[in-house]
Image 1 (cartoon, rainbow, N blue to C red):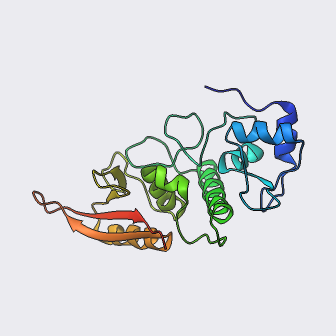
Image 2: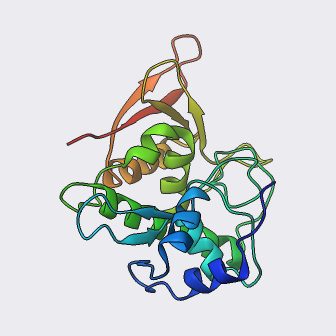
Length: 207
């Protein structure tokens, strides 16, 4: 577990632009935030620094939290999108966390795409397929699988850049597919050869 940001770093984070997450600080402060995964340097001039989704969450947290390198990493001690099968209720606090993570991810898309588009997945999502797809689903209000067996499950597949989304309710499965398509994923419905169970195969759209 890594240390929370220093008081000086926290002040820089708290002073970030509330909409864009643009940061102001010394080069040393900004470089330290980048190193900790809480900020990134825009590749185009004037090379401003902006909060990552993890940085946005720290700014919104009432107490300092542990930083991470992305919107979500399971087991990181910070926010992790629910891929299905975890324990936990979707209370007001969880809804706020999901909303913040999704907005942060959209900002990351905007700041890392050449044309500023937010309608297609970014590099982080391609490197964290399961978490990215789960975040899109949870942010849209879909229910992750619980003890009752209902709800979605997102799983890795042997195929490159593809995840499988399982949902026992056919209508809910189609709704999950529509959400991922709207979020910039290519989707297709398939059936398990042995059981006939339907699932959605999704991969991030490039163009």
